[in-house]
Image (tube, rainbow, N blue to C red; front, side, top):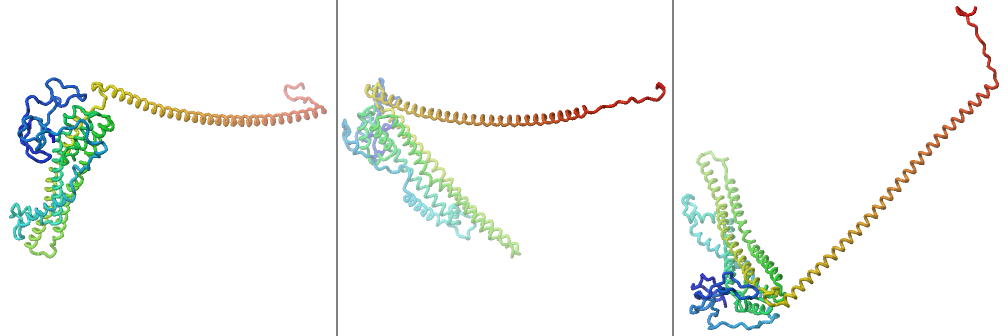
Length: 480
């Protein structure tokens, strides 16, 4: 099994993550300094002078003096990987993945319950007698009093706390497992500087040969899925999208594993407040001054009430202390798991993806593959353009049809309004003419009647004589 090691770890004694055996990392050879850039170009071009690919340490005994030796435990030479993959694609099928972050609920509860019983057993001998005043308690007696005064609330808080700590412990074990898997040389340089359609099967076979104890990790599973997808699709873009989606899935899985712990972190102080409320109700209920005439009895009653109040606030004190104690390791574990996930993402982005070559680079010499990729890209682009053009034409046709319908409806409305207005004007004009004719007729009739009356009068006057007599005047100026 090949392992990775940083140059500053050369010469140190470490434990193999696969078999837990102590081993010495070989000394760093002067001629095998790691590359400043960390990786050669994905096209497989030779590195610049003086720059060599990064080396890997092995889980070899101390007598291996070359840094980057690749001997297995107990063997004299490494197993040679065949030129072609030994496992057929249909024979792989992956392996059953174990949840990398959620511990077993029954196991965590069992560990927490044992810790709870242990803690109660430790505190029980320090339970103070009732005759000892509270002010004279020792430290352990004071701690024991916090647990035994409000037995139900304190026991529930303690059980929740120990259960939470057992979950964090099991999550720490899983995190250490993930950290150990990061030391694996999952993509050995001996199989090729780049991963292409010709040697991707060898890399997949190498992943399947990793130790069963370490290959079931987020990093190994993600790389296996990426390599198998690249073997089928031969497209780096699809692999990139898959790695991004898998990173989101792992992140949400890690976030969901803290649901129970967050519930405990919320419930512990709430239970402390509930215990305080219960203690306050008991203390206030014990106040009875109705039958007390002696000052000493009143003082004793007030002392009992204040003592009950102190006991009530002890439940809140215990809940707050346990919640604060739980909060720090919980947030520390969240940060550690996020850092581990970020390291896996960085490895996939900085090591795996740059070494994938799907034939899209001319520097690799695969001109036919480049042309095929280009033709496929142009064909896909043309297909998308035609689909979009057809959709656009359909939308334009629908808009034109709608415009014609609206124009026809508008024309019909204009015609209807014009006909209605014309009919109204004709009716108004007809009524006006009728009124004028009626008025003229009435006037003519009146005129004819007047003329006829005048003719009758003239006829009557024509048959009569009118006599005019001159009257003589009398007075100063008369002729007589």
